[in-house]
Length: 247
Length: 193
Image 1: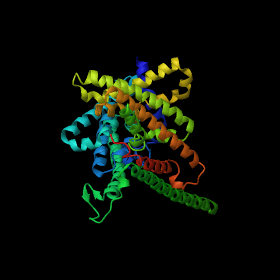
Image 2: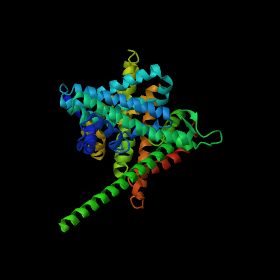
Image 3: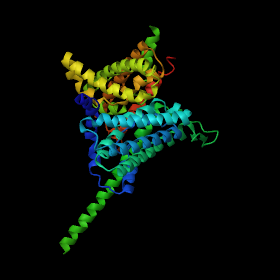
Image 4: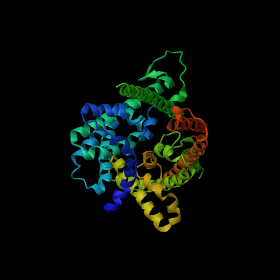
């Protein structure tokens, strides 16, 4: 039974994680502030890792839903990391994947119940996508790569940082989509009555194209940075050898 | 009969799971670099979706609803999908080894995947009957497959074109998907359900 379970829920995430753990391995950030900065900037889950893209795009057609999705994911990720870390000595490593998935599923169900009780309109808008937070690869990846090897508090903070990064990314996609596609921000008109909104941007094609453009933008920025960094390094190296030859 | 045909066509074209609902993007962008892998993946996803929809439907209407436990739907369905994948894996390995060699490796990749999980969820949320659920699942699978094949064909061409550096890889893939999605938008309004 345990073998069946572990391979049923296990191999796929394990494979995904094997592919994913590369970027995490070099992490030397140990301070809590560093962990949060890691999540938001250097390892931002959506843009840098190009993960959890699936349901993320669908709800970015307005700022409100983007923020709601981001906050839900932050909640789920923080607490799934916390509980994974607390139970890390009790969980049999053979069935760890199904256990992580169950922890995440319980937290997602809590989020769902909370939203349907207190924010029913938003719950309707998020629809099936809120439930699909269960299968976000990034949440499982953090549980496996970070929380299962670290103490409770750092794990919680790591989950929070990753969630915050996800929220920022959702807003980076969501704000231009709502502003251009509906001419509003948080439901309030931005451009005045004469603006003719480009409806396509809040529809599905707009989501794909916006993300494509953003990915290209981030790539161009990081390429430009790398170029200047390597140029600086080269100049230092040249300066160094020059000094040596002088000496 | 006509109703089921409409459900099918709507799931394939109008509400295409990849291009209008953004589901299964991880597989979509991951696998569509190769045409053959896309073929295998499409078949595997369709098979798992249909079986998972069947079990999901049965459990939702015969276990969860009578016991008033519908808030367990998400948890249950995750487990159903994971065990369905395992089951399909065992059955095809035993009875259809040729088929298994073709798409076996893709099965495990979809154990926790949003597109496979979403179909049973959407079925019970809209309270489709069993036949309609299954037709919807087949339609979703075929739609996924169609999108995957279209994308794979385009990406094969893309490897020979000069793409600006910043757009190489995922960037151009997303813009391409956007254009495909725009084309599929043309189907909306064709079928009113």
